[in-house]
Length: 109
Length: 113
Image 1: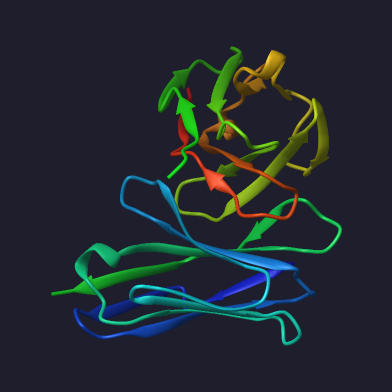
Image 2 (image 1 turned 60 degrees about the vertical axis):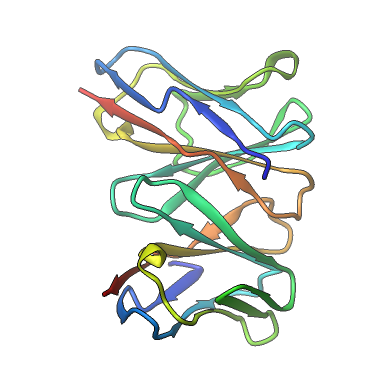
């Protein structure tokens, strides 16, 4: 089964509002990375976390390895935030990231 | 920031032919990866590569697949022979250390016909 469960699968936000995306892990992970995949298919690296919380502009991410989850908060959503957001997590002893199925975000004017 | 370049961006190839996908990783990175994404689906790990060797590979990394990085040039994924189900976007990534963030390329869109 999937080691990374991402929710919601799809989300619509009005400009200026915010929400949170979440990834639950079925096993202990040592790091998580969040990406935005834009309309051209390119993957943009948003955050890499081994623990704790990081913030960058309107985005904030938290990784709690003990409770096996990570979140990505978006505030004051803008049209250019539309795209698919993926979390990817790395398990101890492995050297690759397992991806979630993504959250398709649409920001509405 | 530093980029991973993938060449070509698109490739159409006849089933049964060989294809080589090229990746120019971030210059000081030591770990290299290939991922496969079928349209609209999640990214699936194929293989990682360090110090001239495959470290891990998934079930998706079929016998027809091979990777190499001769003399520090491009990190390549070769598929020989190709099959229809190999149609996908192939992403290359690199990282400085085994446990550090990945930088992804923009992908090569492969269509096998």
